[in-house]
Image 1 (cartoon, rainbow, N blue to C red):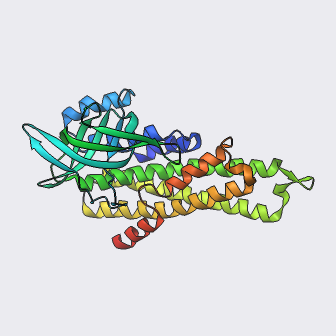
Image 2: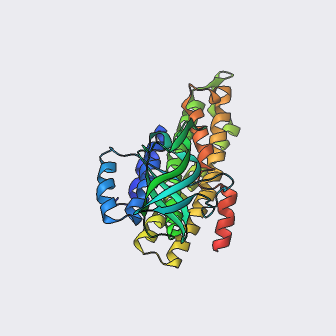
Image 3: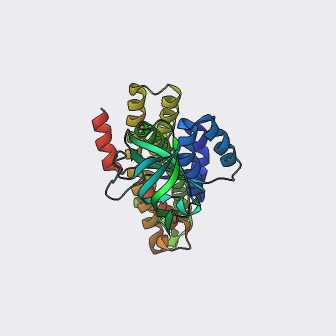
Length: 313
């Protein structure tokens, strides 16, 4: 946690190639970031070493039905109960929920949007687990007066949520680069070995043009991912002033727009150039297709980030 998004970029690229990113993103990219950035010294000492050792998994329970990508739209409530808090509400599509030991939950108090640490072992907490389209583990979580511990200042959660979600967005941009690289390389290899009319299909000029376009999209996406992770780190290092936050948000939205377009282009071309077998479970490129499709939507699709970029400009 002393490093940043730039340090994690290589890890996320490798994760995108291996399609094993969900536990890492849910714990390190989301849940633990709130503790590292807003938690008390006691919370940091109690949780962060266990996360580093792999003994604690976390998840960020924030998204609610009808909220779309609006981070400020939260209906869950939290009330003080003695020296602690009780959290009530429902959260949907919580990444890593089935395996989480601790949840960071967003809820409203009298002072505004706040964050709470909730133990998954609470008997009155219910989790409906499922597997997403891209084979990640997620779940819908309901809270009914579940004991919670305040993280950070009461009512001051929104800027922290925006900062952490931008950080996670930068990480999935890096993950997408790894998945795109695999899709491009495996498709190129297929064009060199698959034969029609007695010759490799890679000798057909039309397919060569499509392959070149895939690599152009990949290189552009990688450059934008590098921009995103560097801005996520520089904004964090430069303080919490408004100008650095806007610069970070604009740059990450710009990267996500380009990444989302490249995800669609490269994943679809990889499948099409493989033919019918490109959609089979046995071929890894079909799994890359699903993950890239989900990355294009995760934390905001291209239209959402285009509107955000224009608004911040």
